[in-house]
Amino acid sequence: MFGTLGTLWLCWTPSRRSRWPMERNRRVTRPRRFHLGAGKKFRAQKNFPLECFAQLDKIVNTRIAFQTEKMPVSVYISDKPPTNEGAGFVVAYQQSNWLITAAHVPIGSNSFQNDISALPNEILARSPNDSKRLWLFDARNDRSPNFLYHSHNGTNSDLICLPLKADHRPVGADIHNLETALSGTLPVGAVLTLHGYPNRSGLNIWPESTTQLHVVESNTDFHRTGEDIACGYSGGPALLGEVLAGMAIGSTNGSGVIVSIGLIKRVIEAHLKNI
Image (cartoon, rainbow, N blue to C red):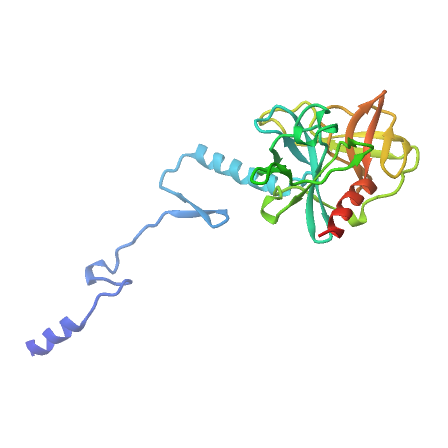
């Protein structure tokens, strides 16, 4: 008899649910879990302070507000370190992405008009939740430019078209479709909305600002407005309603100057035809 019971005792293995008989009625208390999203969990211990729950609620509400915030139309452009600042924007054309900005933004002068190599080697492109270092010149090949630019009568236009690889595009910024943009002339009196970052510096950049200007003259290369363009909008997009219509440069003789989409498209198309 004892041999049989001894055999049964040795064959019995305590399970996870019921270890030894004396522990069957023992209650195990586990801390509650609160989900914050993205797979993260927060454990609330016994006697958890109420002010910590208030802080938790603030974090969750901030996350929701950030996710529902409207995507910026432009990106913040500067040299490195940031001493000259302005705006830019990303366009998509024929399965490729391009960063468009004004040439004077990263240099702070017009010296590029006679010598394109006066531009810095790299620029910073920033969105609310991303920052990219973009190289304007190839340091391995005698500083050959990585970007496209336009020259007329020996003078370089205030325009940079930089091709972007997939991992170089600033995350969280809008992408404009260049094929559906307004590439022709604009009617006199049309209202353009500029997007940019006037009077910004350091980390106090967002959100982007907007201003409205009225077209007084337009051709296939440039548009003129009746109002000046403030510093910080240079290089940023000009929209007619919700449609891309040009890139802001600056002011001359009391009126604003905007590069037309037609000129930007011709510069990129000329490059793509030669690939």
